[in-house]
Length: 186
Length: 192
Image 1 (cartoon, rainbow over the protein chains, first blue to last red):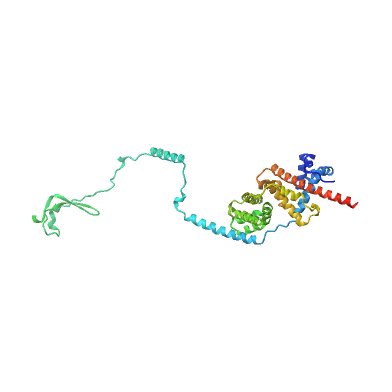
Image 2 (image 1 turned 120 degrees about the vertical axis):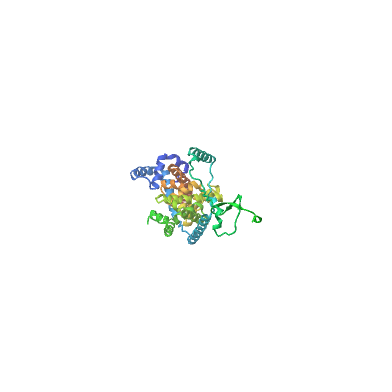
């Protein structure tokens, strides 16, 4: 008997039976359901044709021995080595990347929220009062030296002091003294 | 050694473990790519790309049975991209159909090489979404669930595609078988 066409197969069996057949062919049909399928196959030509076709296709597809060409492994490991080198280079470059590359873009909303937060925090923090300063930042010490008794020191030449003071600025102390008179006053 | 052990060792820096994974799956992935693309060079490239991706993404490798599905998903996506790029024919055109149907040799009497050619031509005549399902089922022996995981589709979609692909196969074979039957009948008549 010739095999029926595809259209007859589609309409001759319900979808459930067809699915059962495929499940059997794929090894997914429970053993308990197999006797029912075999009974159906005994009386259904289209289902038998489907089964034959799949089995023949399966047998034919097994005829071809698919082997990976031997050079493929070498080519693959060469590519793998190249990729490793490349990724190492990228890693080194990223290590050397300047800091500004690490900048992240911040949304306007986040920036505004941050600004408001900082402002509020500033308002809430207690203001330092100026009255709290008990000690001056720079401590000044002054020492008054009386030059009227200069005869007793090593300076033999009399020095006449004028009324205007003279200021000597050194690294440490500031010395305040009266200016000496002009040379022609001697 | 189980996949889990190999993957864990690979993630800890054992390069030999990666070679183990590669040796275990390279044949299957290559066969899948070859059947999808029907081009040995492209299949080799895609297979290599697939394992390079595995190497790159070793930190994200799944240590479960789904590793195989994940691996084949990468290969499958690469194959589809390759097919898309090369704009290869998809679907059954008249020429291919004629070759399949009017084959001079009956299927039962086909030589080995003819059978291989018949299968290849039939696979190429299918749309990739049907082809991948049939290849994963018939060549890779994947279960319905595994095929669904690889193709990122539902179980019912997998079954629907597989059954449709087989119906097309029956349709083509049925015509060939009818010719074979007619030839046999003719032979009987002339013999009488």
